[in-house]
Length: 207
Image 1 (cartoon, rainbow, N blue to C red):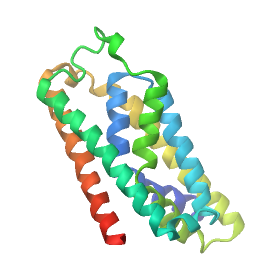
Image 2 (cartoon, helix red, strand yellow; image 1 turned 180 degrees about the vertical axis):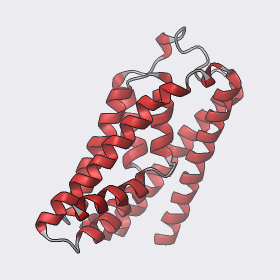
Image 3 (tube, helix red, strand yellow; image 1 turned 30 degrees about the horizontal axis):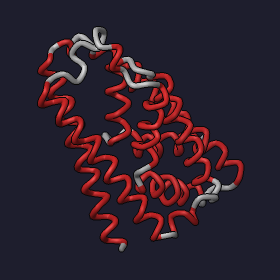
């Protein structure tokens, strides 16, 4: 039981911090666009990456500097483009002001899943979190404890993403005002670009 609680808390501390993935899930929840697919995609990524980290199967990836640098640069470019789009939406003020009237502009399911995978997997820090931090802690546990640790971590992941995605609906009255959408798009743009610049610095430091 201690291992379950440890996994629950460690994973919670890593994924609840505001980042590109959480900002994306929040906005999809507000837009009501393919939110279940977004949540399940995020959880599936966590399931795979955390499992690899707990059972020590992914540590070799973290050891390959070149692949980490390439991933960081690709991720930074992706986030800069996404952040730029958010700033443009904030400037125009038409991000999702009338989402019910603009259904023809909704992203397709495939596009949404690809974007979710992008904000999730094109960030080397997710591998450091899963393989170095979670993997390092799990490395001190025996086989039975690792199972409970993994279960606790995955429970946190599922609880967080479902709460974030569907809980966003409670904010909809607030987001009926155009000004609120401008603020959200601006914040998302800042988050995406700051993470992108962080990845660029990270890549140069490794290189």
